[in-house]
Image 1 (cartoon, rainbow, N blue to C red):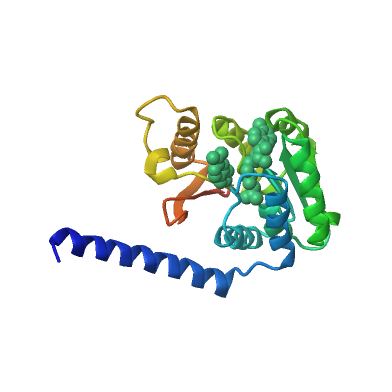
Image 2 (image 1 turned 180 degrees about the vertical axis):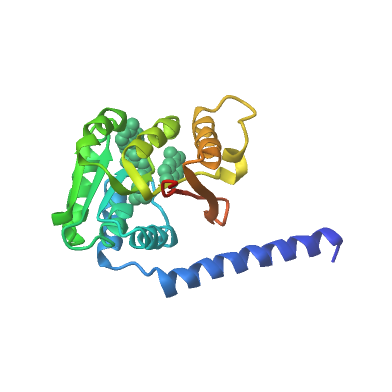
Length: 235
Ligand code: SAH
Ligand code: DHB
Ligand code: MG
């Protein structure tokens, strides 16, 4: 075997180990129930792109919502309701998830998926452009957790709204914040998606009101969530 062959074999072995770890953690800590599986089937049947969060991300969202005692959750970008089901399942009785979705077709699928998963009573899908809907939420704030997962160029504006609509101790999470490392640098060639996410990461990592971390956990550890906690007010 040449040196190249040995290196290749070692890399393939590492990739396999990573896949096995992810699969085993999913099985052990984040198994999907029927409601979640049906949301995936409904998404496929509706011809949606397969861009839902992973089960591990879903479980982490639940864990964060539980850790901050969330009873009011806001999601930006619903798709077929997969992440919304994970989030809604963490709510206590009387809790509420509001999810914003630009596509009326997606919203219809989401409502059906929520109903099938048994979370129809505590969820609300609002249809429209998120930047138009967010100002209408001020009367319903503060939210305990905000999950950002819609179009990428306005991520910095979504952050501004998230800060306005939360309280000290709330948690703000955004998906797709690593992008093979490309969302951690200023884009080398113009790319409005990467530029939006990079600006988001730059702001959350520097904002004194937040304590934050980008976590590689998805797509074979090349993408993931940036998690930010709104710091308690200084006394
Ligand atoms: N959170 C979902 C995936 C969301 S995919 C999950 O993990 O299950 C992104 C969604 O954002 C799509 O459904 C898309 O239609 C929606 N979207 C895109 N631009 C938007 C905008 N400006 N306002 C609201 N929703 C938007
Ligand atoms: C895309 C969007 C997402 O929210 C995601 O998780 C993956 C991909 C996209 O628009 O390509
Ligand atoms: Mg996403």
